[in-house]
Image 1 (cartoon, rainbow, N blue to C red):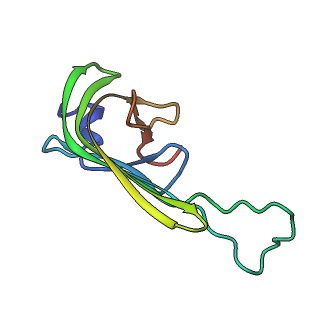
Image 2 (image 1 turned 90 degrees about the vertical axis):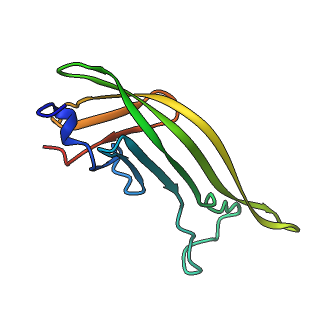
Length: 142
């Protein structure tokens, strides 16, 4: 893969295309990968307007973490198809109910996904998964 655009993304952090700094995907040159996605909303402060009749607190934080290996399935000039496989862990926190309080849970899955890598309209390498992996890009828009 030397000289192919695919070699330029190895060992580099690819960010979420929606500019979410809490979503990252890294394909490592030793044929391993890591992906994590965190979701959280800031809670309102006591000084913000809470005068409306219905106040809905933000969603509790969650974390998705996946790691494992990868292999190239197809290598074309403008497209690379990769299979990623490994463990997929989803940690979540629930606000529960008023009497029980908050609770935490996590689920672990063994997974695989097909990932397609190409060049987007901004001339950036783009990685898009089929099921578990989202869409990521490397670099800034030109």
